[in-house]
Image (cartoon, rainbow, N blue to C red; front, side, top):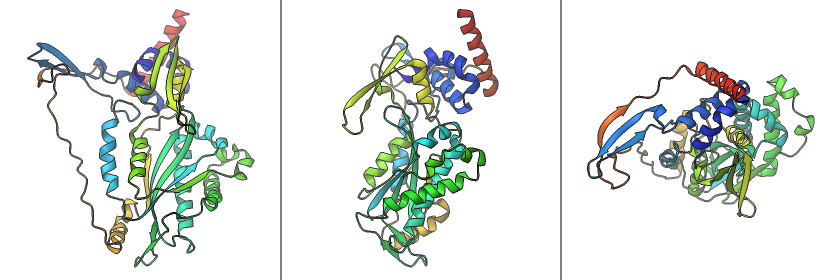
Length: 375
């Protein structure tokens, strides 16, 4: 069983019920995953001479939320990010949006996620410049993560930070202790205040937030992660892994989906069963707006300041890493049965499609009519 099969079975019903209120990014993800590696997207037909059989290879949708289209990109991204790591201790900082703001974040994704990034990075940079701590400019790699293991909505940002800072005059590297960068307890109120002040620039949104939100403690976690290699690999999984991979789907019966997840506290495997439409809704709430950047760089890692990163490497006597190759060898397709090389037999053209807004509106109208006719 795959996510695409669930979408194909219940996608029309879901669009008929919720299509008028669905975000364009959700409609696109639902449509793309339904069509992924099917005749709708076209492909190639190959011939295996030893087996005397045709092998069909349909195109993938390449949607970043499709569980079958993102796995290969994680390793390439990881290799590129490793070139940014410095030979110093690293820290992983996590900033979590409080529960009172999650409904607002779900309905205003771009705005709230942007503010989450900006306010958390600014809080960490502000505290790091304090002479009592790092005392200078730090570097941050930030990754947005929106889900819990049971697909619950839990937006937070992880930052990987080298332990130390570049002095204001760029003449010295100011190392941090191996087990301490800045106090997390001091980060929390700064993060909260910066988010509050930024949200005030959107009066309608700000006025909808309960006032008690600005008086409670906001969750910030900071821990040492050694060289940063393992933490970077951890972040890579969230950059290219979607909220649910196909291997966690257990069964689909009686219009209900069961999937597994590992409980964070006990590390035991648990199972969650949801009606199919509720399952789709829970998955789609983690689909990001079109073009939204979920990996961001600040301080020394900001592309506009990469020359300062070269200064830091010079001060640390660290060699400049070789650029990671992004070229992949194009291997000839092979028969899945006998492994012999395949020869191209013919190309399948994709099905013609209307422009996205018309296509989705038409699909919703047809689905609604279908349901009415059935009823």
